[in-house]
Image (cartoon, rainbow, N blue to C red; front, top):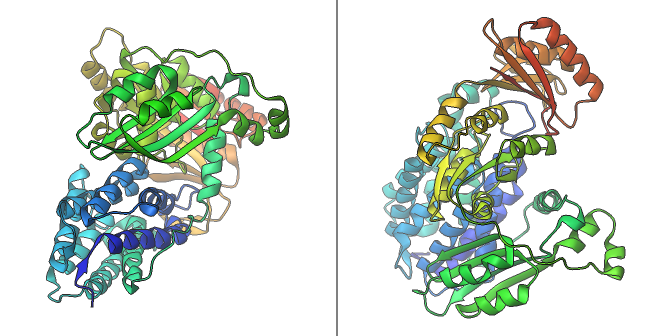
Length: 552
């Protein structure tokens, strides 16, 4: 019988849960309500929790409180998508109850699950039943009703209740019932709890890299390093963690000392530790300043020019000829206001830049940036006030968590699509205060109707429409507006769904998988159908969606 959870056991529970969730991320991804290629709940939850597992994997802890705190902080920084943020909030609540405890009793664990549920609910503005929130709430209830003294038995009771609740989510939400699936976030949570239970055998757990995580990380690295080698001003991506010699010491001195030595700087000061990330030409100087705060661990220094050369096939040449280090460029001067936006596709990124957006975060559907990614962009913008345009409903909650990790004033415009983000950016007026601009941008978002054209990844029936794998799908908000085997016909039907007699401007952003010939034919088709509207076409370059369509 296991009557208490100590630091070593909880660490094993987290590592086991990360393994269990990572191994089943594809199964969770497949529980997407719509048959479109954006089922990323499993990936988001897996990457969020893997961030915590990696944080604690090679560290030793003297108390349960220390492990729980590290997990809570790491899941918050690594939170991706709504499901990842909710998962991070659950462990934030767990950490609250475990704070100051060397070990936890069964009743402490039950209280921690209850606080995790309450914290997750409070983080969501409009909680929806039939989701991960319902599953964690029922699990917490089962934990509180358990009357024995064995942690393993408590987990068995919690998992049994959680699985029964998960099965019922299919009937709780019409979308789930129509698709015949359970809630993806709830299923991801159950894999976490099952991982906890698997760690009860007392054996040490070895962390297993998440299936597909390396490929995703490589793709993200390639995206970040897609610029020409000559344009990489700071060669060395430098990352490490400082275990403070004095927990009360501030990292402000380090921040001031190294801020002019590079860009993309991220310094997270979290009580006993400081996490540092910076692109610099002087990693030695950065390390010299860091050691003044305490002992450094997990030091990683990568030459981004050589990485880029490797990605583009020029690694051997770079290794033999070397790369000249350019003169240092000063960090961006601090400003009163900056705007950052999430976008996938160089055309869309350039559109936002031309509209005055300061920083672009590469991402979108199927590639949700983490809270830490968004924080890094906010820090790179170096402004007292930062307005964030998430441009995707699944990124809004992650963006909102940035306010807990920085002293900058963060404003998150609830833009759920690229057109809404563009409309918000167009509302910029330099004479407005940050608060006034934020309100103006929120109003601008409401003036746009937007949709997108993608493809079906499986056979299904939605709202009476029979959909075959490979069909083109026109999506308008949260519904499927058109289905067909002809790309432009499907796009035209989607546009008809969005437009009316008062529509003045129709903007179409061509994706990377739509040909120029198809785009030209659609432009002619829409121009004939809407002679009184301005029909504008742009090369967006976005993945996943053949077209993104905006109607104003």
